[in-house]
Image (spheres, rainbow, N blue to C red):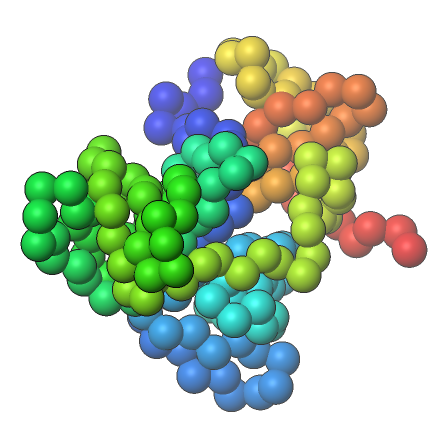
Length: 206
């Protein structure tokens, strides 16, 4: 039976928050500062990810242990995701309080300096210069993009509607990594999440 600790799949769960500063040793590596946010594009190996820093759009490899996956808030097409550069302490009851590193949904613009938004189940106004907008990854992922391929080492029967059943030996296209233990994949017309421990990574034919 599958573990009840499995994270729910989401289009946002490839986003991670940086826990520790990381200084690159080679040009292929990505500099990280604690509190930054990154979009994980793919798993390089057991110890490294490749991704994009959502603050400045730079890309490179970084250690898995330096980040943790997060769930981003749901937004409407007209809304924007911001992250707090500094803490903001409200001066009136209509202001929105937040702390450095918080993720804020910007709902609308009041003027050039102030906007309306929500954060931590609260809604209010705040100064735009306390925040920065998430940079979009230069490699836009979709549910149809194949990040890697894995081969099933044992058969698995799905226990939930959003899980993927497969037989030992089947090839699975990985469309998204949910976390270190789970991925969302596709076999033909069937899609779902599955535990990576039931599979082994293989090379995609070019």
